[in-house]
Picture 1 (cartoon, rainbow, N blue to C red):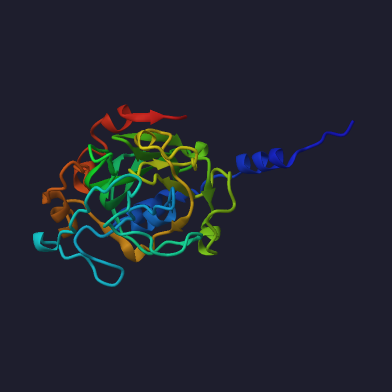
Picture 2 (spheres, rainbow, N blue to C red; picture 1 turned 30 degrees about the vertical axis):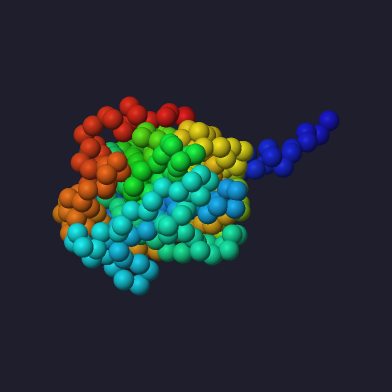
Length: 304
């Protein structure tokens, strides 16, 4: 009897046959000596944001009063003010919101990125996003969030010594003071560069092993996931892995909005010296322990 191959099986076979683009050792060295922005963009996430109960989220913003046409000014007088906690579910009050109709790309925002070659066979790139707050107030009694919020995705590139080439091997997605630690082939949704350039985002879905992971930002507290989850919109769930996240808006950050933010730059020095309150994981502080400490992986929620 002839075998019947389902559409799901065909999709699974196609997904397993894909592999992220590898680059030569010379290409990697070239990226690292030119501030690695091309490396960062080559494997950058497509970011997704969603609203629950018709309440839009806070949206990433510039840390020192910059905007889509004006860069940050790195002094205390231009530090972006925090937004207040409002009554749940109004998680996006008084902060920057997407401000476009659902089902459309969101507006531009910056990525405060850093990178480091940890050893001969590992390079890490950090994509930091900044918000004016996270969370909300519940029953005028409990604050589920705080002023300011720094979140990040860390992409780990590993060298294939035999082939003298490099490719992404893992992604660490910040989530509730830890990380979701995913092998690259286990990231549920990815896009090719051609699809990104064509403006595709929501579809295709469920395809693994391409160059650009789909990262879903949770609605209230901005934790990162590789999957959607729209089943839980109660306050408590927003602080765990049931957090609401969807794909009402999406954005792929243009290279012009990547800001190198380690301590060798004026951006990094300003970010590292500013007081962000409970949002203490600013880009230079993450960079300082990026390779030397095991806390990143020890705190990870390992899903592979």
